[in-house]
Every structure is written in structure tokens, then in C-alpha cells.
Length: 93
Image 1 (cartoon, one colour):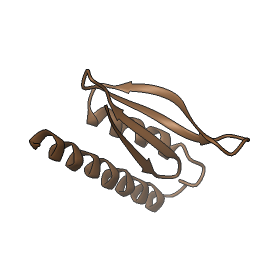
Image 2 (cartoon, one colour; image 1 turned 90 degrees about the horizontal axis):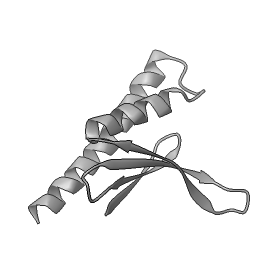
Image 3 (spheres, helix red, strand yellow; image 1 turned 135 degrees about the horizontal axis):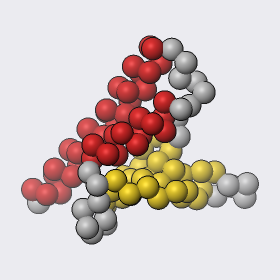
Image 4 (tube, rainbow, N blue to C red; image 1 turned 180 degrees about the vertical axis):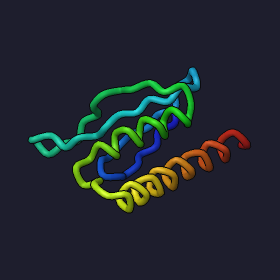
């Protein structure tokens, strides 16, 4: 199972399961100093991953202007593009 970690305003883990579905976890810092996966939303493809990340990230309190929205969308695009490139490399191997 492939796993990708991305940093936006939050930290996420995106896993590609054996059934070719993506699972998104939010990674949260716990009181004891360790990190824990929270959630576990299943997405059928990379487009659904993008939609989910956009929804999660645009709900952030720091995104209050159109320029902040545009910046956040560029960050999401860059992270998902990197994941697609990595998966393309794996599929060619």
C-alpha cells in the first residue's frame, strides 16, 4: 500500500489501498506529543481526493480572501500533482 504525506494548513496522510481507492487521514498532534491518524475518508479516485482536500482546507479560518483561496488551491494542486507523478513512476516500474 502506497502512502503519501502532505503538508497544507493541516497534515494529511493519503494511502492508496489494494482496491485502488484512496484513503485520506488527517494527522493530529496529541497531548502526549505523538501524532495520530484521524478520520479515514475513502475516495474513489484522485479527483475525489482533490475535492476533499479543497473542502477541508477552505474551511480553515485563515482563508478569508480570494487571494488566500487561490494560494490554497495552488498548494493543493502542487501536492496532488506530486502524488500523481509518483504513482505514474510506480506504475511504469
